[in-house]
Length: 157
Ligand SMILES: [Zn+2]
Ligand SMILES: [Zn+2]
Image (cartoon, rainbow, N blue to C red; front, side, top):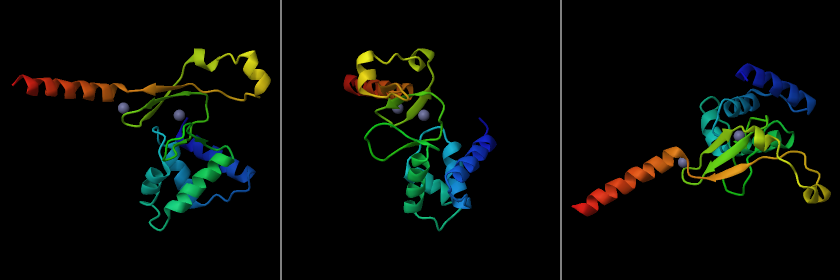
């Protein structure tokens, strides 16, 4: 989706939920929607304050929580702090790198069609599902490899 379409959707959703479309709110949303790395409130605060030097961290954080409450964005799953936010409401899955903290989107049709077992259906009304894979991303595993190579070189001397 183009950023303009995102903004149109943003304005529509705000109106629907009686949330005033202020330049600050729009800037917060725009920065999040334009980012692919599931930023934290602090990262968004750093970005938005370039444009609005008087905005506080608290305002940014509260705004993000309001956005997620009305379903405009998603909170990334997991209990790690800081909280991370996701502008992409389309069905997708996540890979969490446990080394660099990157959260990488991926799509997979098998995961999209994940069958919810009857035993769970009886206990819960499942409205959505997301597969979360955890591990080490290529970038980090390459760095680790480089590091062990240096270490063995040093040992040999
Ligand atoms: Zn990584
Ligand atoms: Zn995502």
